[in-house]
Length: 231
Ligand SMILES: C[S@@+](CC[C@H](N)C(=O)[O-])C[C@H]1O[C@@H](n2cnc3c(N)ncnc32)[C@H](O)[C@@H]1O
Image (cartoon, rainbow, N blue to C red; front, side, top):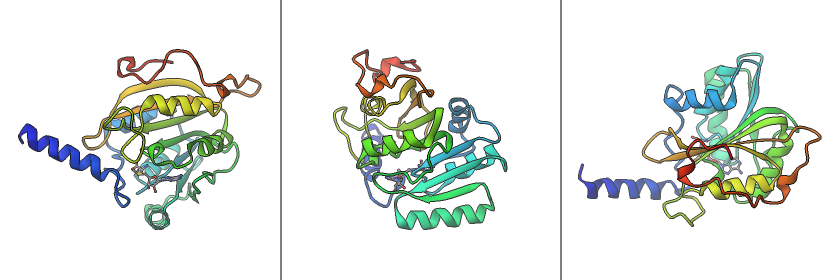
């Protein structure tokens, strides 16, 4: 394929990423992303997790198999048609450790302090009210629980919208909601040609001061040079 064609295909893919009915290439449970997720989530049997904005549900099913019958995965979706398909996919998989949850634009729908870890994969840039959702995520993690945001930079660094969101914007917003930053992984394996990053946060332990309510004036963690940086 010529460089021009490659550019055109890339542009088409990026454009389609904003289409209402397109939910990306999905999650490949057999690919390298699963290996990396096991590490950042410290996955083990018995954990309680949430997959927020589950789309077709591939990640939900993969996580449910990892945590086993003693664990649970809450799988949320805001789009009614996708929610119905998600319920069907979970039913077909025959897993009884998945709870499908109808999400709202300002509320995840997750129970309070339910989760050891929560994942949003390629969802954050779709959020219409991120500060309300971040507050809801904070309430639904146990103290010390982990929040993982996997997303993609937009084609123009200043842009935020249905094509992606800069890592720095995600980090600033989530820290301002009361989370502690743990790690930014700038090169995250994805499916398809879209480059991704993974930002890892933690709900502060009970009693810790929530100084993150004031956005940090320290160095930004969003630059590509800070691959694998702990911020
Ligand atoms: C690009 S898809 C990603 C799906 C899946 N996480 C994946 O990685 O394949 C984004 C999904 O987020 C859902 N979504 C958008 N805003 C949401 C919200 N506030 N709560 C839950 N789901 C949401 C959309 O309906 C869509 O299914």
